Length: 128
Image (cartoon, rainbow, N blue to C red; front, side, top):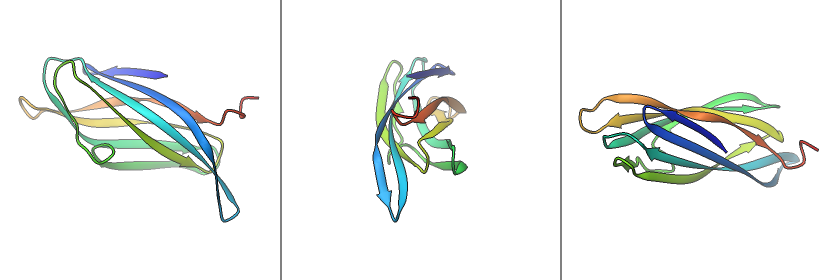
């Protein structure tokens, strides 16, 4: 579990290896990650965008950007929590991810970035 707090927004990440996916003689490794977002501030905030850096030990680095998370732009009141699950398909059995969320403070429209802590994606057998 990885934790980061930026601008009174707490992000917790948990990961789980899913399985090997075979595709046209290629082995792919599927990882799931659960993200917990907690608004520890005094104002209502909205998650507008995400920006991920994905590092695959075989395929190098890629970036993913887009609106919201899993099709929504959650609104979090002070003290409110939101969680979602997503996944990442890697060509290798070892990688990592990190990134940022673009948030908007609802009272005045101020935009700010929240750090998503770096987390490792590894198969259970890689460390043996």
